Image (cartoon, rainbow, N blue to C red):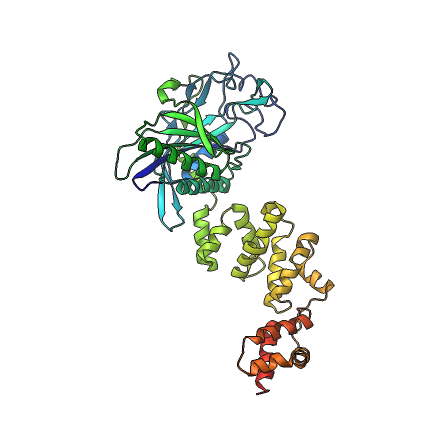
Length: 480
């Protein structure tokens, strides 16, 4: 980005709530069912039907508001947002406009440069989803209305974001909170989490907002980052060439790495909002609010700080371990069997995460139970096996699910700690490597690494490395 300009970015995020049924009827929200099967007269908008609000939608919305430090409005109302799409049978969407359920919150992010920044949340409101138009079936456009009436919350940020990196971090933190609360699975590929970006530019130091465009159709956080950068660069080029930025909606094409105009950008008056006459105001009293506060889990920022304070972990470790609730839970389950907090962190962040990546599975699908990782750590700490042996049997744990102790015994890998046995191996190695012994005695101390390696090879990795080093040095020094 040119240093003469700064971007002003606001994000509108739609999160599909993980309820079993839709927001105003009893139809299933299950993803992947055959087209047009999760439907009824209510979500199809037949004449004379009446919507009935799903209480869980309200609870999930309030919980997200509480988790992002929003003001929870004791009374909010639903409105009809009028527009015509082929996949919107009613001709309007039930949403919230003037009186949303949550307002004035914030999310804190930390940039790569270490800067902490609060991104304001203007509002969180409840609404229903529209259907889906399918355009890749020959000459015809097909409509699947399974998604009509699926419950959403829309989370609208303040225009506080200045860079694509900040947008990425904000979205990541938002998804993290949603999944910790277990109110949204955060799956962008299935449409459970969708993001539209409002972008404008202005000269550095200017306070007046520029003309904004909206970019849609981004199916990953990285695509959001790329699309925002593209649009910032496009707008700067227009301004530099003396052209005007036109207020419009853009579609992102990830394959071409570019955005192209879709339509003129609508304003709120284009939707002719008015209160929905079929739905009563939503009242959230103090008693209900207190009950929902008590249902909140430990949130990621608090959990990260606890990991640092209680387990003396570096901030980097704590950040990774609390990146998902499932990973944090797995880590704490390891600690029920060992108090070596850092070793547990290392095994989880190293061999475990790389195995998950290689197998393309989540921590919930990982075949090694947490207590077996604890057992592996204890075997090392007790001196039964070395760290290298532990690493060598890790694939066996993944493949068989057997306990580390069982595998160690089956493979006869118990560490040799008997000093007399180690001395015998050391004497044999020194005898076979007289040239290296003389190099050591001549002042080349680094050669001891080679000799240690030879001892470990002769012992098939079973000799205690600490004892090997100690005995080797003693015997070498004895030859001076």
